[in-house]
Length: 365
Image (cartoon, rainbow, N blue to C red; front, side, top):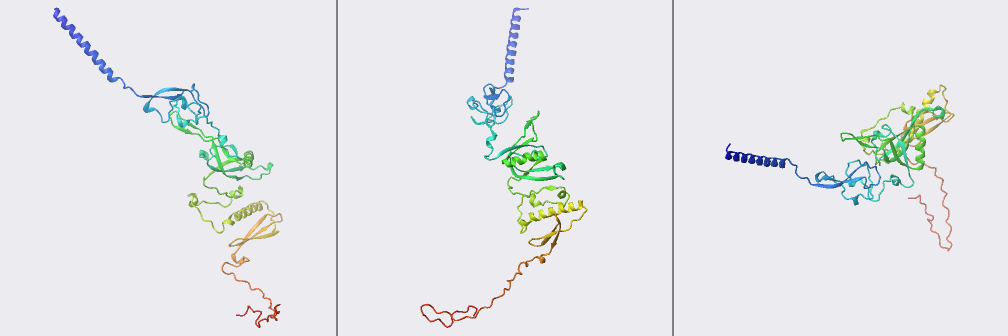
């Protein structure tokens, strides 16, 4: 081959090599990712429990993309020193301002118990704690159910609300994170209540006698309702019903007989219990004495046996009342004592003559 041809061939190979190198560099530059702005933040190196003090061994600075840094992330150790988490922190989780207590502050829930009050914790489940709907600050009534125990003097089962308007202080309710990132809520196993020492004793006694349940109530409802115990006689007695207005938190007007409704209810319960006892005892009790109870619109006669138990009640019409109906009251005519004839009035001590028409008769018009 001629030398000129060899030179042209070498020149072509060199130009092709240079072109290929340039093209590969251009392609590599296009595929290289652009530089991302980062910022250092503190991340947990291990799990940290609630209330544990943070140390330098538990955390480390990591570079995070600025657009991925959570709000409130801490980037200075001075902001972490002498602080404790208010909730559990997990490994790899960034340390956030809203998850930490203030410097020098410790999580001590016992300090929140008011002076003179006590913190009583009871065991509950879904049925006894309104299926996990309770939260700290809610108001509840405490109810007990006692089974029949003739050996201890309990002839029949009964239930009773023995504490009312009790504040929930704490609820043992954990929130677990599932594998897919969703939260699974667990029903509380214990509930702590703010009570007086005497109420704490009652709860302790109730726990050993029967089953305790918590009944949530409206946080603005401070009324104390009738808490008479209910047994099998009341359970199988006349049914009760609700109205839509009370379920919609409407305020009902007080009737004129509101003050006597509770008393009449107690009397009705006593009569129902007495009727059930009389049915169980074939020997009929004879009335020993009776009592008349006067209501605003009726009069009731209750008969009692020799041992003081009510055995019957009869209601009479309003006309049987010992007082007249409204609007028909008239002043009674009282006997008038005879008025003595006026005699001569005594003369004044100064000797002035007495008028002829003195003293004046006020009955004359």
